Image 1 (cartoon, helix red, strand yellow):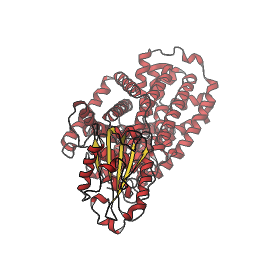
Image 2 (image 1 turned 60 degrees about the vertical axis):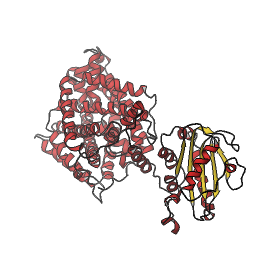
Image 3 (image 1 turned 135 degrees about the vertical axis):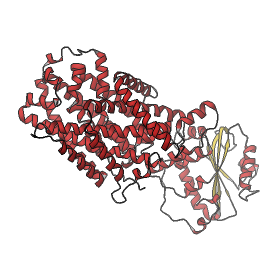
Image 4 (image 1 turned 45 degrees about the vertical axis):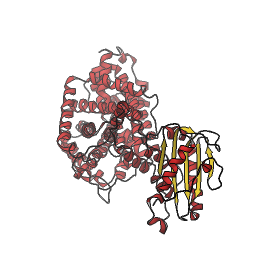
Length: 629
């Protein structure tokens, strides 16, 4: 099972998100939504956009911490467990494929205006074309998406600029004829219009520099989409006669004909066609990644996760998603919209809940590069908004959704459950609340590897030495004499008895050198007989140890054992350590780390200069573990 290529930049992410959001949500839904809420449908789109923005902030935090394929499935599974992850992964794949099918319905609606025959076979040919494009490679699909979106934004901007002068204010009276409850329920109906957020999370593993690229691309795309939606809906409601708008499946083109004539209608019809094409392409591109991620976790057969060695694309997943896309095209229009909206709402609610769970779990390797603001109020508000919209979306749609959830759980019970038992963050929360050990810290190890891949951290010699170092963890107040006993025990295990005395710890001997590197951080080194030995003992004292040579209580002490041939590397190691401990957050993180491995990971995952290209020296190949690789 090969890896996916990292080829997507900020413009790619922006265009994929914009293209998948700005399609059916603006070119078909306004007429259906207007029938439910009247001119206040503008508020419905704005409310749905605000809710998506709050969910987007939580999602960006999670993706910046775990930029993996099928990201919302991935981080929900790591936060809530494989059962919930299976449900979300399958439903997200279903929703994105459904949204792409809805785009094909849009293509059909518009092509029917230009051709005197049934164009459904033409639409199926479009779906086959995009399946082939996605099989060819991610970058090619993204390039096609970028061209489409730039054309689309140009046409939509012209529509807004030319239409404002023709808006009739009396078309907005009464503003909310069905009441404000209808406005809120309509927000849930049109929420699927912002479902492009899912596309970004699904493609996270294929993004270059995800820590920067995903926040920039996603937030700019969501902001641009809310703005253009509200402006276009405002123009459409103010230009098109209400009786016409209510029954229109092509409201933007119909409105363009009013103030731009036949050329305007054709231009906006072209814009709609381009928008639907971007949605179909983007949905197919990202939906397939959920199957890949589920397969990697053994929640689907390994066949779904196979990646072509040369193209670096998941060919089986793309083919299967393309086949379902064509099948969904023939389903009912309103069923497509409501079911997909419900799935998007559910996923965003779980994303907000995941932020709360992961932060409260205090997993030391949960290190997002972007943190959602106003925690936890933003997440609670997002959850409340989602619950409100779900309550208004309709009992029939909820029942359909529950059927899908039940089917996914049954699949997990009979297939995924017997494959693996994955550790997840909710167990860490329960461990904190119950004070009972219920986790093995496997999740921290997985997150550590993700951070290394995300930040492109190679392992140099100093990292290897830290990985195998001994740790003395003092949770209670300790005197230097007690530390001496533990240090002597560690050194004796290495055959280094008798090289340390109490005079050394007090700074009275010349054999051991102590330095207070930073307040609360000390380093020491002592010569050893083995010329090629270099090792370190990590000492953590939560309460701090008072040494005569230190001005402040020492919480972190790094005790180096240095052979005669390792003096130069010792200087490099001290320089590397200095880059780590100068972080203003180091002292707090060091004192509150929950385990010995967490202490090591603070150093191993630190942002510092590394040199990893040098081959190991001969004596390092067969060295004892204490010396590092």
